[in-house]
Image 1 (tube, rainbow, N blue to C red):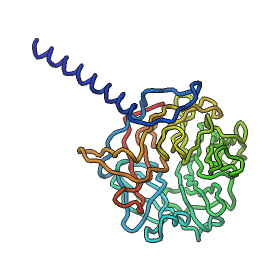
Image 2: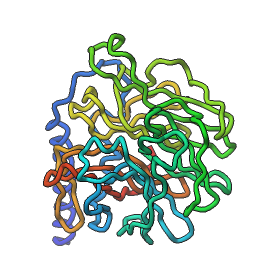
Image 3: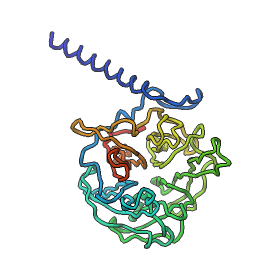
Image 4: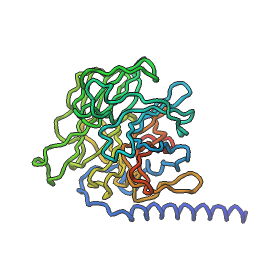
Length: 351
């Protein structure tokens, strides 16, 4: 009986400490003051943050001499195929504008990943002749679609293949005139897409370069793509974003992105989530960031990873459209010139 009481008391103490820790974490942020009428689903918590797990050492993918960016993973049979952009580290950070796409494989979502091939270079593309960046891989029917940002046009390019191993056929022109695209294909073939647009500096509220979100819809993957709602920013309060990734679950659109000018979290480029029932009006899930460079990233075994940049968040969903992994591009504080890929486990999560 005494042992039972002791156990109960210990559990209660752990619960109290856990709650205090969460409150302490919230109070440790220097949040920007937001409008009181702004829709925020979780004001003092972030359930998705609580679902994030420590990163296995095998889930950090890097290549000596290269920077890797823009991860996207698909499972084909018993193999996970990771596509990302790559450029030579020695060419400097701005060389991302001249990047190409590679493919790596693993028998586990959380690695280790092994480089397999260069998928496509700018010199082999009909119009993205300067750089092929931000690739995302999806399957539509019996076809694989690898879509990407094409430079110098800064629009969305489509590459199709019958096999995950290629060869890939590029469309001769862009179907979506947007930057940093993200596409969701519904079961009936309808398409919803997001992208970034930049108003002229003379039209911005703060005189700085703005990164707003625009939405598109199409009857099928080949379009035509029409703007959803209007040409204005889909984010509330004129929040700004970088790197949107969209998926549909719980009868709503869910968007993971980064906080471009720290207008939401107070930490620029921190990772956050928005949701929308109609694809037009979005609300903020939580002001508490999911992942940011000011806090060490926990690794399995009690280690931590100090990161300098965290960008290009991407999601991996199971067959039930539950979020089971959050992927990011990052740089280590010990080497802020080399891009790496991190695949972080998530305890099955639906917003």
